[in-house]
Image 1 (cartoon, rainbow, N blue to C red):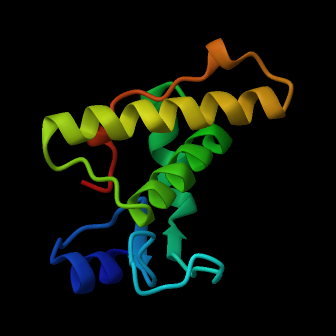
Image 2: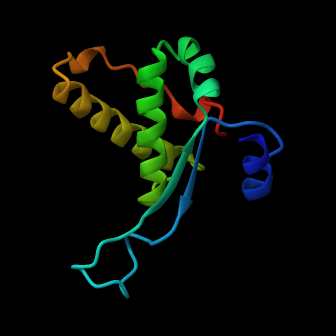
Length: 121
């Protein structure tokens, strides 16, 4: 993961999640009825498990957060600017709460925290 982060982002350290876009969800040249391949998401389970307690998450919850985070990047969300980060974090929170409901868990117990502090930055 360190090598991929260095090669593709120019950041010489490991990270928790990387997203690689294939088709853009906003590409007007792709017919509406065509299936999109948004891209690939690569997770670093050891990094995720190591950082989870620091954010008040279990490794499984942190992994869900990183997967949702990667998917939102493929959908065009970003967190470079503060206002972008607020929008992205709110979307992550909403999705993770919906997933908790689907699992029969209390969505109020979902803890996201500011994503900008995670290892992918």
